[in-house]
Each structure stands twice: as C-alpha cells, then as structure tokens.
Length: 443
Image 1 (tube, rainbow, N blue to C red):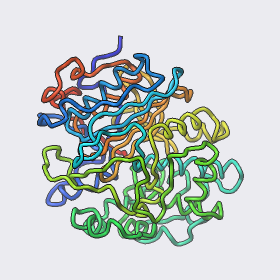
Image 2: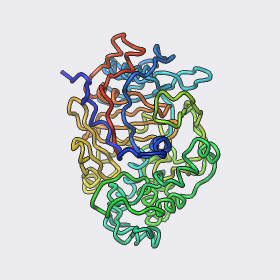
Image 3: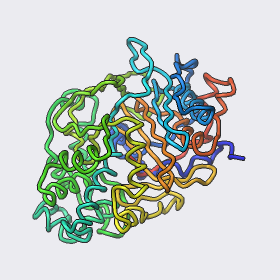
Image 4: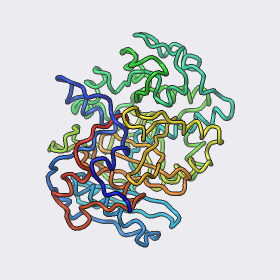
C-alpha cells in the first residue's frame, strides 16, 4: 500500500535551499528566492479561500480512473490557497490532462488543461541537453574551462574562469555567485517596484554575469554544490560560441522542432504569452498570508534567458522528458553523465546531475526531471527512469501552501490527499504534509 503523506513523506521531493538570510535583508531575499530556490513547503493554517470547491477539467480520453488521485491532488493544491493548477500525465494508457482552480482572477475563467506557462529553470535541462549533444559531436568538452570559451568573463573578486569547467557549471559546483543573490541586482530588479518598473525591458545576459562577478565565489570550484543561476547564463553563452548560432536557435533546431513540441517556445526579447494561457500572479513574498496580489503575466523573457526563459505546456514537457530519458536525444555516454548526480548532503535521496534532478516519492519511486519557479509561476516536470511515465504541472501563483508535493505522490504512488475525501477548505491547507520543512536549491 502507498504511504500516507506525513512529516517525511515529501521530504525528498523538493531539494533544500541555502540557509536563510538574517537581518533587514530577509524580506527581500524571500522575494527573490522565488527564482533561485525551491521554496520551503509552507505549513500552518492557510485560510480557506474561494477555491474550496475548485473548477475541475473534464477527464482526458486516457483517463479510466488511473489518474483520479492526481486530480484530487490538483484540487487539494488549489484548496490550499493557489489560484489554479494545470497538469498532464503520460503513461501506458496515453495522455491524461487535468486542471483545477481559476486561470483569471478577474473573469473567474477556469485554468485550462492546454495552458502554456513560463517553465523557468526547467529550461536548464534543455540547455544541458544541447551542450551534451555538442560534446558528443566533438564541438566542446565538459572538461573545457570557462576561460577557453569566454576569455576574461569570469574574473575579479577571487573568480577565475581558468579553474572552472563546463561540467561544473552544469552541476552547480563552480562556486560562482548567483546573480539573483546580488544585493544591487535585487534592489534594482527583484523588489516589487523594481520588477514593475523594468518588467518589459530587454536585459543582456552580461548584466547577470557582471552582477555575479561583483561577489566572491561561494566555494572553490569542484568542492561543493551550490545552486547558482549564473552557471546557466554562462552555459548559454558557451553554447552560442561552440555552436555558432544563438541559444534560441540551437534549442529550437535540436530539440523543439525534432520532437514537434508545438507549445514550446524560446521567447527571446518578448514579453508576450502565447495562447492558450492563464494569467500569472505574484505576491512578491513567500508568506502565503500576504494579501496583495499582482498580475505578472507579461514580462520580458530576456531577463531570464538560458537559465530560465522558456515557455511550454505540461504535455510538451512530458514529451521532452520521455525522449530525454528514453535515449532519443543523447548517446548513452552523455545521458549517463547527465544522470551522475551529486547527492544533497542533508538528504541523499535527492541529487543534481547535469541540468537534471533526481527525486524520490513517498513510495520509493525514483523520478528524474527539474523544478522551475519565477514570478507568477511554479512548475514541476518529472519522469520515471525508463522514460515511460511522466508528470508535469504548473501553478499560476508563486506563493505556496503545503500541498505542492501531493501531485507526484498521487500520480506515482496512488496516494489521494486527505482533502479529497470531502475535508476540503481549511483542513486542506493546514498540514497535509506535516510540519514545515526547509528546502534548498531549486528553481
């Protein structure tokens, strides 16, 4: 029998985050960690919302009761306080799609099963895949230094690109400071006023590199894993140098077009969201009790670039991860390298490879994929190791309750959330996963 979710049931689903900041910078750091970390699963009493009886999508053609627990988990996520959620699961029965909650707070339109959304750091798996393809083609080596491809880019304040390899960028052991942790960058772009002022502006990837270089490394190269979005900005720049084409073109020609991912785009210097899609909402706070909600649907994708700018759908993400883990995108040697993970020292059941995360469900199923979070969007995309069973989902709010681990256990373990038995509302948001857990690494 699958385990009932308890205090430790979902501990390994989400990697942990770096230690909390202290002092007056704590609130600002909380806001910008929407991007840089997989936030702690928040528990405690979340007030019952207008979504106690969430809108529900019709079952897809592949659903014959196989995904009933997953739909119940989507309902529980919404009952916990997020606006809406869309999901897709693919297995031997075919494609199932589900949704719950609303896609537009003004019109109350329901969340759509075919919604496109910003996948944030799930982009990193695409970037790593392209670089590994290039390695297989002899265009670069994972052991090349950053200096070889980007002379002088990583220098100053103890940073030295001559000592950092492409591999260390991809598995986050470079020690390079995360530009989204840089105080000046946070003040200018990540505060409420800063985001709203600059949201439509083009931002060169070199802005991120310069911000990171203002800071000393967090550790010597190769000695410690520390998630840093700067790593994938640099990886994108190297990708362009090695391939001779833009990052956007390489991803499109190598992955999107061959796999016919028709809902997937690399938006470049665009603030638009392709249809169908829902509105995206942010509280600019990790505190679910915060009341002010902002519509952040439109924002210039260049501000995330190769570390997190792509747009996709749940069904397309399933197709991508199925192809990747099924061996259709990488030769065996490169796929093995991608899956060579460094375990989280605090939780060895989770790990990070080359743009690919490993997770354990409460029933012991090992999953591979990535998480992604940005203003107004939280996403998860995972697959079994054989590439035969995928799940992807997205919420259109970036504050989170303690139910966000439920869909994975529901889909892979058959664990229906307690709220599904009729105890929706307040109970659904007060501790399905138990006491608060601090998480590290992430989006």
